[in-house]
Length: 207
Image (spheres, one colour):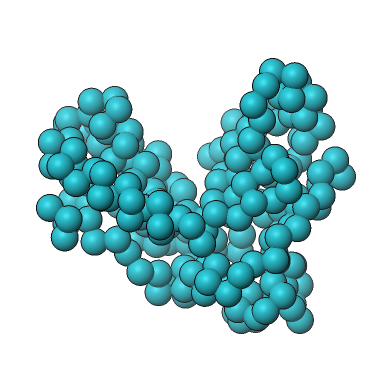
């Protein structure tokens, strides 16, 4: 797994407040090549050490979490989003803005957590699986949540194929099909993540 976040990686709320605006700008830039639209109502964001750390920092800020025990509890939840070696982890957002859309789409999209895949050049596709603890919460088969946590497990040959021009991310659900060809910058970022070579935002340097 990508090295787990520890208490030492998380700034206390006062220190974080001093650097938050600059850090948010860094994370927005960090996320840009990791954010992939899939058709009109879905977006996939590939997670990293920094995207997960940002979520913990923001949760601590919003919930006024000041104790080590409180932060540790958040870390135990969010560390599950970090990818293991040879994996990518991602958050799938089903972006619906009205009750009518929710009622229309969510029952039709059951099983969506296993319907996202990388289409690769010269290699078998890599299909999504739900993150294990999240999958345990998907107890209803009549409607799907609007947010899913996904994992993609790659072989060495599939990692190499991801680097090739023409690789794409696709949704192959019977009720929703979409495909986005991945730009070179995105392929590079994801290959680096798979190989454990992803660069990090140096939060301490902002202090």
